Length: 296
Ligand code: NDP
Image (cartoon, rainbow, N blue to C red; front, side):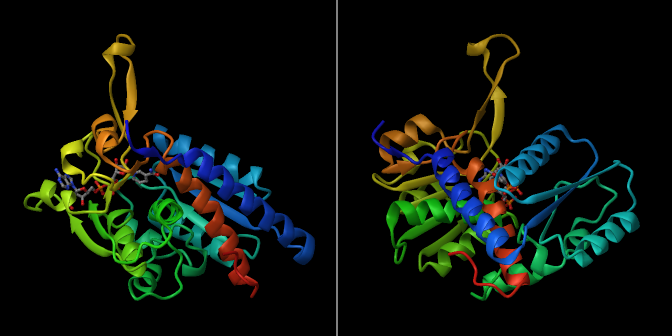
């Protein structure tokens, strides 16, 4: 391996430490405790784990955590009514609805019911528009975490060629907006893109957010490029024993690490940064709601 391993776990711990410092100051100086409400509908096991981790880390940095676990058959009307209540509650500065929602619920309608100022996931159309037009927005947590790691590694990103593989609303598109805002030359690749390998080979930065295990291999990567692997895929791992599985990214770590200058591992790369950025967004929302200067 020649690439530097970008340690998301360590990075996320420093972000959480900073957040905890801001929370302590908000309490001491202004008597404010940032509050994050997380809404989970149904019992999807992966979502339950995410929600538990979010609640635990929210409390660890000194904020208030409000969990709303609703039955799988919750009606749209009841969910919207809960969001209206949370929007109006001054103790709550951030609201997150865990996705995916059960299929009888309209995700767009639900997300857009969250007050944009409390939309700490940055998925409300107002925040999407603000980000796309370079205005002050709530920025989606996963791409924000990727950007922080890229800035930390490169300093300035200005003029770098970046390829984002994946065009989802939650990762690919906001990632591209953020890189463009930092003056990268950005290409977005997706399932219809022709000769995606050649595009990646021209990139100084490759961000893979595809959901296909180990799709990006070392021969796609320009020597010295930075690889950010957003993917989280569970695959069979017979080498660990019968029925065992392991987590891998959208990049083939070993072959990419032979060529890249820096790379994020899976697990331990982008994943931990996502929750840390959620906590940071909640502090930002609390400051904005109270007319206080925002943390950097
Ligand atoms: P989506 O399924 O919403 O989007 C996947 C994107 O990849 C689509 O734009 C799709 O293209 C594109 N794609 C699929 N197959 C190919 C292919 N063969 N070649 C090129 N592009 C392709 O996924 P998400 O954006 O939600 O998530 C992506 C990955 O990131 C997943 O593994 C997910 O688990 C992970 N993730 C990790 C997070 C973290 O905290 N680390 C947070 C969120 C997601 P098209 O639009 O044409 O269909």
